[in-house]
Length: 361
Image (tube, rainbow, N blue to C red):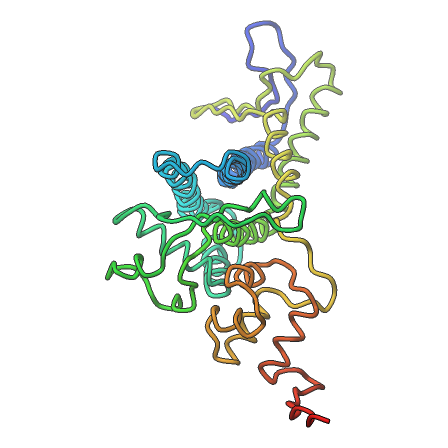
């Protein structure tokens, strides 16, 4: 039996049939593979984003209650740790799911290098470039096999900023406790502060995963655009041929091995909206201005000075937690940056000169 190809609605009522070529049928079948894969790709990242937003909302509420209610009863304090752990574990689980599943995507696309190879390279780049990304990867294994991540929190006093209450409470993992586990990956993690801010570490981790997602999206974007354009064009051809609707429209192959390929675009609008909504990685820090150092720049300066995080904070008279925020991505004031450069003899044009006290007159 000869193979024939048509555009036709898969309905019981009378329907229009529009002949197409075998090549057109194959192209529509290929588009049908690309678009659902792209939707799942975006939904995986959206799951991570949703868990991150839930964490931020929960932590902000904990900070607000800490500022307003000021309860120090043990059951209330234990509830804070329990709630924090629930959200941190959700972040770690969603991240692992994203990393594992995204590596299985787009295997059928003729990319050079293959999608899997590119994904591994991008994940490795984020891992190598961020202390907190490495920490969160190690923390996930620790949480899965050993214990909950958050064991401590600090409640700081309100500062002069009107919105300072939003980060008043710091949920922490304790480095000493983590390192008691012989299986905890310590390599490259010695520079971690003694008490690790899990909220800020999660922000750095999710930002890194967002960087990977956006880069991977760019690799397949042209194929996705072409697939959507082909579907839209095919629907228009069918409607222009006289069809009153395109409900249940399929590209149909008749013959020994009949096959139907759905030709629809409304469900793909979900993918397009997710891609537009998540068009850039999540970054809650204020954007740096031109010439301002990044967190990675500060880590490099500190490494050259052979300082721990605590030593770097101490030399510029800052709390440890504040220096951690600068390395995590918060814009550092120019005065603090210059002060550190001077204190470590790394300023490009100036040195610190210690002058003797003037004699009494």
